[in-house]
Length: 108
Image 1 (cartoon, helix red, strand yellow):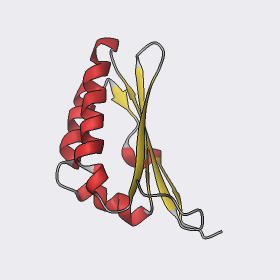
Image 2 (tube, helix red, strand yellow):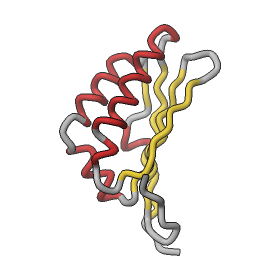
Image 3 (cartoon, helix red, strand yellow):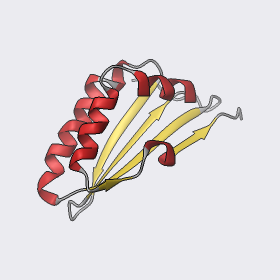
Image 4 (cartoon, helix red, strand yellow):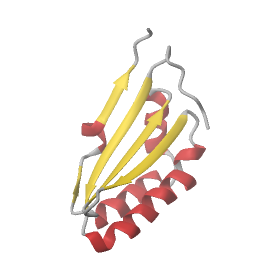
């Protein structure tokens, strides 16, 4: 797995999905498939983690890229939009990608 260089910029994506408890496993499977099948093949992808709330009504997807450009390329990578569409169809609501995107492009 690629390591983040603290002197380079980075992009962090945080998506929070609200979901019915009986759909959590399906949502997690889709998000894991997106990570393993799409994101890990995009140059500049660093890591992704999924967290499920204790009551199984929220899933948080946290992912990092080495740069804003690497993240932009992920959105156009074959299959990325399809996975997000599947995830959105299961979730009751979620934070949109752009709203949840945090960038740090400054050098230290």
